[in-house]
Length: 113
Image (tube, rainbow, N blue to C red; front, side, top):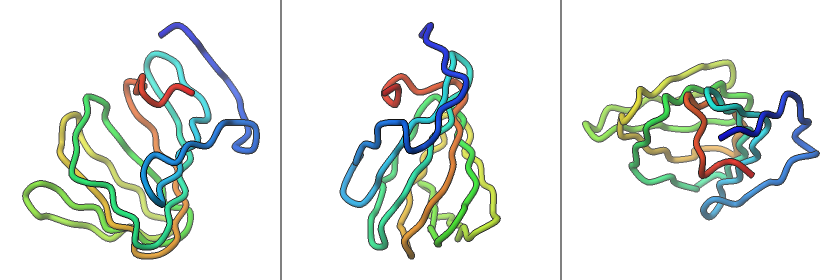
């Protein structure tokens, strides 16, 4: 991963529908860090999954319930931050149309658009 992008507006980047109702726009990344913008439609779900990258985020608008494999869950609303450790299984249920920013350390190769 040698490509480095230092600044990109969300309107300039490609938006990908990852699964029904989940849209990701990769803004910037280098080998160590990636920042993505997500919009999520009410009722959409991301199944339980895990990845090497540490994932943290900030909720801009809406409401999302995140859950783990131990059935712990949190409700994230505007102004809230959250974090999932490397290889920590997690998923989500979108309770309201939502917008959030997430970062991944290290960058996720499958999100490099």
